[in-house]
Image 1: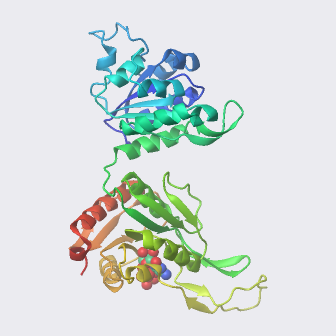
Image 2: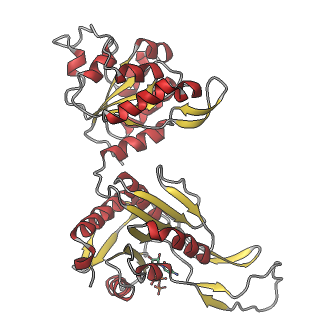
Image 3: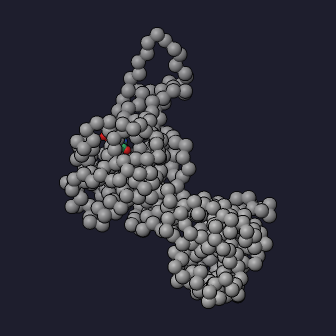
Amino acid sequence: MSELHGKRVVLGVTGGVAAYKAAELARLLVKAGAEIDVVLTDAGAHFVGAPTFQAITGRPVWHNLWDSRMDNAMAHIDLSRGADVILIAPATADFLAKLTHGMADDLLSTLCLARDCPLLVAPAMNRQMWQSPATQRNVAQLGIDGVSVFGPASGEQACGETGAGRMLEASEILDELIAFFQPKLLNNQRVLITAGPTFEAIDPVRGLTNASSGKMGFALARACVEAGAQVRLVAGPVVLDTPRGAMRIDVTSAAQMRDAVMQAVDDADVFIGVAAVADYRPVGNAVHKIKKTAAMSIDLVANPDILAEVASRPNAPFCVGFAAESQNLASYAEGKRVAKKLPLVVGNLVQDGLGGDQNAVTLFDANGAHPLSQGHKLAVARDIVKHLATLISKGNSDAQN
Ligand code: CTP
């Protein structure tokens, strides 16, 4: 997805060993469709040279305040004009201090002071430098001044120590930047999401499950985080990375999923049931592996319907259901919406199989059916968030039948 198509990014690289990750970041930004102008500090240029960035971005690289390549010799003004953001990665402790105090003694710091676009920084430093009262004061002040701070992460550091201060990985900074550009449609909303299948054990090595990759639920969790929501994601057994900023609770069975949801639901404004919950579980769970016989049968008992239970609570959160159908999508999805008393159901036909990266869904609410454009699950998730935010702002009452 060309998620940064049409965006102009000034990428500032200051003097830390994490500058090597900035080369990868520049590559990812270009791949995502952004136009990049790299500005190096003198120290940054010691770690990675201008030719590397020039080759990656296909554009001139800047580091001198007195550079005569700009027509008016005002690189500090012209580079940030028309830029959508200035992103400093890595941002050293020294550079954060400079920004905090409005110092302007080189091209990058001058450009930051003279900017009229948002400033984002990805700090990178030794853990003691990060924890020092001076750096913490500076970072707090930058937050007050409207600067967005990405990371830092914790882990092994170049100096051999372990702790907070590592720069985020290039792909994580890219995700943060993409999220930065999304409209904050769910600001301050607390969203609880179920995703993936559940697994109902028959014996220690076998079980019943549903075919679900969890990709749609995880994409929705990411889209909600990007929209400014506080997200808790109750996930069945899937092999997917947790979307940055979401709090993940792993479960296996429907009963565990129900318990996790019930523990969290009091603090939720929105509940989205994306999980393909197994409707039944075996009666009992054999302690030992069941040996093969000529014929066998399994007695099943119904699992709790988590979504219906949440939707029927007094002061229920705004509830969204999913309906994956192989036929009669409109009547089945609308039937589920009415039966479970949901303001919104997301329906899709599963004729193309499950687990892909694309989806085509139709939204069903009190005003009828709203087909969304087919696309990557993240793009579809963002469109669902848009519709959801509109319904929430219109008020739950007129959205419900
Ligand atoms: N759901 C749930 N708990 C269950 C079953 C489903 O929370 N035990 C939620 C799903 O997460 C989804 C919606 O309910 O949001 C699906 O509705 P449902 O009628 O249960 O769908 P199916 O199980 O597919 O129903 P059917 O098999 O009858 O089509």
